[in-house]
Image (cartoon, rainbow, N blue to C red):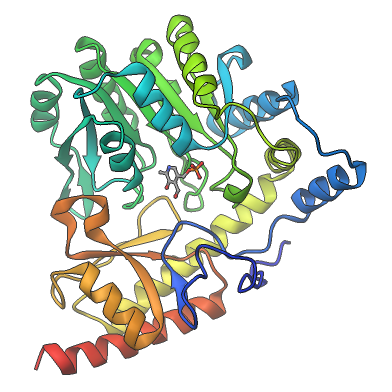
Length: 387
Ligand SMILES: Cc1ncc(COP(=O)(O)O)c(C=O)c1O
């Protein structure tokens, strides 16, 4: 049994998440849990070896991904189709530059991971958005709108699977329809599957690799960084089944100098992927209990909020619009007045201003403290603004 009640104290290590003084951070997708001991040992062993010089990507890195994906997701990835990258975001930006041209349209399904917009806009491409809609508590894709927009000259789709921030696991039928539409219209699909293994007990995400129609249009980004909280080591694996597209992606990653890892990333990722099954299972159980606690807390104490437990992610997507239509304003208010900070909905799509995103990957003790601060802040807000 691993101890998820134990969280590292990151106040003096320049942690991005913990950068606001005296504020309990429940925003950026970064876990507070102690690093898996096997991963720590792998890093210590590498340190003890010394001579931390330039390091090639060892074959074992790709084999560890292959074995993990086979065990967990029933897909057999050819290791020759894999390329190392210093992160999913560097890979996305590089692939955008290499496989599309300036002023090309790139589609995203919103609400989605905010940094996709940066990768599109910073490279002078044009984002095209289609909003998911809620039906019976589940987010669904409007396939008419999706297809019409794809046919308007879109060159690439950036898919988030599972979908950050809402925790949607795309089902096989949805993926098949998306794949067919993209294939028929020569649209490249860049699928970001970094959250693949953060799922509620008994749930499984479906990789795009399971769908035949994706094969020739797919660039897949996977990593051990989100599930095992290793993002600070900067590693990912880009899988491109189509050989000629892979050559281009490989060239792009190398030209952008994001295809070589540091001396620690390989040992840490290999250890996590090879030894992490139990840690992952227990982490998902712990996070699921946090989700249930959040649900009970909101239903009991903040009835104006709407929250349903999603199948995936350690992030909770909460509709706060009955109290405040501007999630950004509310997040800043709570940060200043209740010393707790969340992410705001508009970051993930302009139609989602009335939402906040709560990070639950922390100890139960921190969660309770954060939610008590939230309640205190909401009560203050109501007194000030909702008389
Ligand atoms: C969907 C998604 N992709 C990518 C990233 C970041 O990936 P990396 O740290 O490997 O660049 C995040 C981080 O939260 C994410 O949520």
